[in-house]
Length: 329
Image 1: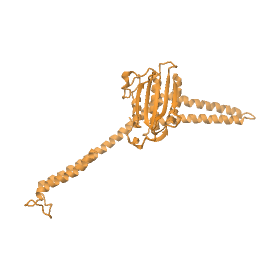
Image 2: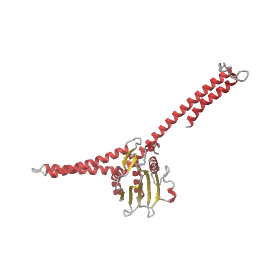
Image 3: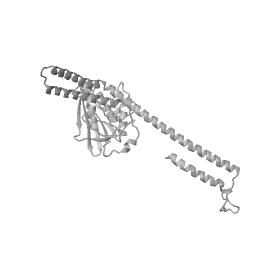
Image 4: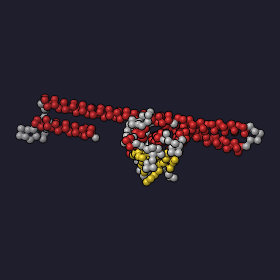
């Protein structure tokens, strides 16, 4: 906006200075300008001043255009850096989920092999039970689709891509996330309680980024329950429409809660309470939520444990303006 004002003022100032310099030369002896021949030849020093003005104005315009180009390149570089950071964060999450991913793929593959062996034995009989074989083939197909879905989810997370806004059901993504983290929760003795709306919860945003945000919160909650007995190691995960136009996602653990001195720094970059943490998980979650026009906060629940809640607009009130709000992080 400032550049536009400068570009508008520069020609106007040139015109004013032009008439200011030529004013004495275009007046008649009695002080009145003639109707014809108004622009008389100017003195040499006046011509030099006019030429200098034109040159300075041209240089100023070139400088403004160059500055605009450099700013545009700088914004593009920053956007690429944000995409790289988000991608690196997702790769870290996938690394944490590696055991869970292997389990989720090996289990259906093992079931497929067992069912294939059973079907082969049945078909080897003189009078095979074809109905039973059909049931086995249906199980094989179901397990194959399950393994394929896990691979699809992992592939979605590891891809490097720019944010893309679409409308989707947030609860579908939440249930897919539970499929990935369930084996980790089981190995740690953590119970995940879910509370989803009976109706679809439509939002307009980037499903990969929101998946990343929810995964980070769930993994952090499980880390908070690391040293607790299984009876206390519980997480409540919910996504609902508490009121029209608003979607709430809540991840609550039943651990020891957040120390008061740390609550104000939870979403600060590089602040971490983990021995090998980088302090980027929660800041990335906050930037993703704010990118979707939402807010996130953390508090201690009255019944114990920490509660993280983020709120984003529902699809009916989320417009295309969110997409132009910049890049997350």
